[in-house]
Image (cartoon, rainbow, N blue to C red):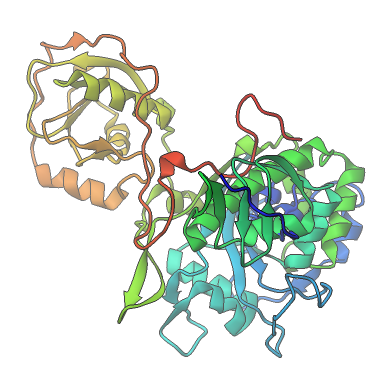
Length: 507
């Protein structure tokens, strides 16, 4: 096996403000920086030094109640302004005379001050959507900020995804690097030697590496990421989507680093604020008072309080040329509904049911997958016979519970009320294929499929017997599908650089 030759590395990460709340928002990478400015005492002075973008009309819905969830659009600009001209991140860059730039990373962060939870969706920068402020039909969404700055990008995101944006946060390369350096770097575990010819990332040895601001920027910007495996360099992850996964992994590590470095301490927070102030821009409606309220609500925030998503997309190829990415994630899927504030009001843990069917291994494995999704699959039971299609039998008053469960069963099952039933039962039919682990079927599509069944008879469940305990301690792991044309190692073999695996230390 040939050992990769060392070469000078400069890893440029985007920007992160690990604080508690918006820090995680980060656009995969860039979110960690501003959150720092959301904390106590010296915070007011730090916020006063942060630039502002003026939004007109109703592009931003800033009039929200103090306890209401809030959506931040967090944008990392492809801008190296402020860096040394010889810096690898600045070489060869030319800028629009108006001072606008492409968006290098885009994410929506929703924070719930009451529940202390946060959700972040990373939007692929190559997603092709209508750009209302442009005079052309469809463009890649990252061009919206080049065409018309923050207001144009907010309008494009809102129109494409039907999600209301409350506040805008913008960062560039310099801000990201300064915040990472203020944290004395972010520890990242690399499973293999790694490199990216485009950004200058070069990691000679696997294991724990504390990345400074320049190295971190190289990692989060990497779109041709390669790992040295079995004597050769192998491309891992496909451009934009692979980069989003690495960015989200980096954000988690940055949050952990910020907390360990005292991000909950006013003095430490003040230093993070000052590091980010020169290169961070906020909307004019994001007041110091609102930031303080958010900070107080997230005093116990950890990386485990953040849930990250990335929508499903496919390549667009026209006349043999790659154009960009097309969204295939249903617009009424759970990840988008969460950010609209209209996601299922019923917690999955409150959906209690028995899984029944004729095939023992399917019953046991699917019950375990549903438990991993947060449902309360209390028992597994075997039937001597079942219908050709799956049926959910629910007690009176639990129709919405049954409809929520039905979104995760493929193909969609029928549902039927049994007034004398004490508990819900999912009866797997002979046509049952799988549990939809990552992307549940859209609510509208599910209700339509249920309605198509018409009146359904209550299955005979008297012949139900308890299923033996699972014969496998490790149920099969679900897999995700990759966009066509991607060149990547299989998901089972991929290990993202980020937090150290169990049993290893990286700090």
